[in-house]
Image (cartoon, rainbow, N blue to C red; front, side, top):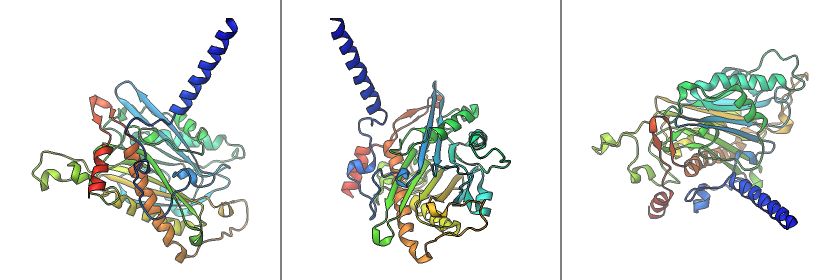
Length: 385
């Protein structure tokens, strides 16, 4: 009898572990990525995960902070490669779509054309903690014992609608944890990490990701995008006028004599990773096209929106070892860039749509609630257009 109870206990424990494991990325009823609903945007195919982690070596870590009724925030970290980033820097560029934001580290990336730390996303008033966490992580790495200057790249959007942003609940320890626990594989989306308290087009926004793999005759390179969506405009999904049909869009109060009010302000952080062999100049050109992906979603880059694109190449042959006398990268010609432009436009738009589709109703500060976009109604609009 005791043996039977022992086996029963082992079985129930194993079953519980399976349920917990399966539930880590479980989707609430009616939620899913846009491709789960039969929406197939663009002409290029996504990678196996349809995520930024389809780019070889890229890892993502997230810390979600939900406390009581008022704290809805977090950290998302993107680690470009598995080595020591400070010693093996990556070619990088930053494009500013609209500069109402607080992106730390931008000028050194623009000046030198490389990045030497993980990329951290958080909320507007936690950029300082983001920098502190990146510094702690980088200075503690083996081989960095003599390092006296670190250019931490930390981006943000303002989650103050749902989060007690003035409370500054993100700590540097949260940032270090997001970096050290970063991993490859599927990326959790929606109300997680730096997207826990964000709002997009009046609906609940969040973290979203997507990728594209170019056909072999176009180079076979992978482009991955991760977004922190927190902006406004007139939502379009795969060409369908979703915002207008749902009656939730910018300037409706003026154009239709409606009481509906929409706030176009906010921000969108876009992180673009690729294994294509690009230098900073062509990475900036690639970053500019990510803003065209935002345009496909109906974003307007309003006066009060901080829209930044950080583009990084992780091509192993082009990592920058400053201990060597010369840097001899192997680079694509300019005329090979157009397929990559199309890929980043498609992946950026789909990443935003995934952030909306994967988000769930969220109640936060002062009882405010951001509703998840109604996927059933969106499908009706797309199918009936």
